[in-house]
Figure 1 (cartoon, one colour):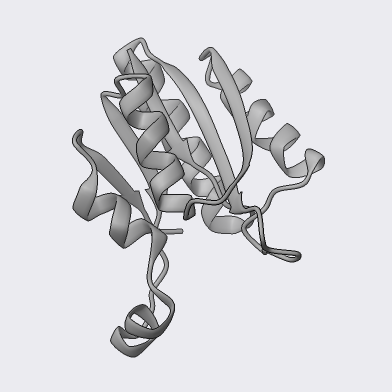
Figure 2 (cartoon, rainbow, N blue to C red):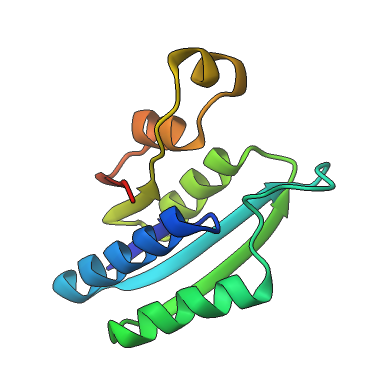
Length: 129
């Protein structure tokens, strides 16, 4: 069994990693950490550096769950990448952080978590920090 963690750096990402670790431990599953950005982006605050990914790995090690990191640059949107990985690994759960945004902000900028929630073929656990 596999839990997919849609990871973005920050407090919300840390909370999501802890939740994914607990869920995976309860299910006896492994975690696939997905951190993605569009290849055409020069700067993306959702792109994790090595220290941030090391912290996520530490959190999952503390939860005693196996894990794999997929640190991907793609022409696709991050939500599409997460959903593709979830399909590929036959995920039983996707964990994603959810921050408060105005309806106009969602309309103008879109929402990765919203796309994951609406399009995933498995259950999605949305985490608020």
